Image (cartoon, rainbow, N blue to C red; front, side):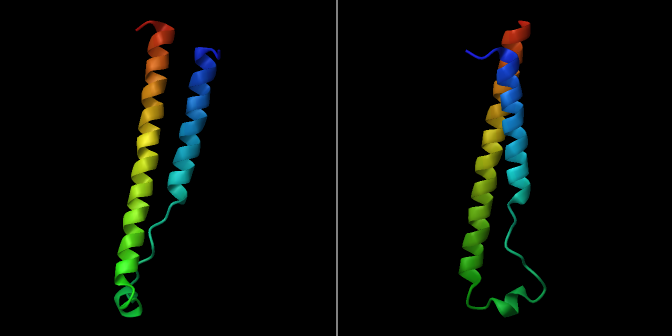
Length: 80
């Protein structure tokens, strides 16, 4: 079984990877001409934006889970 320090460092690396992944997720562009160039595609663009929001929410929940796990590992390690 891995030590607490190894588990904490693995969780921190997972958090940094998730944050990098979160930064790379982009919303579909909306420019000034967006309404004119996407008259027939409005529903598709809205669906894409909703999917991006779901992906970001899923990644944020994983980040929160890892942060909470680090806190519990530190509590176990230091007996706080």
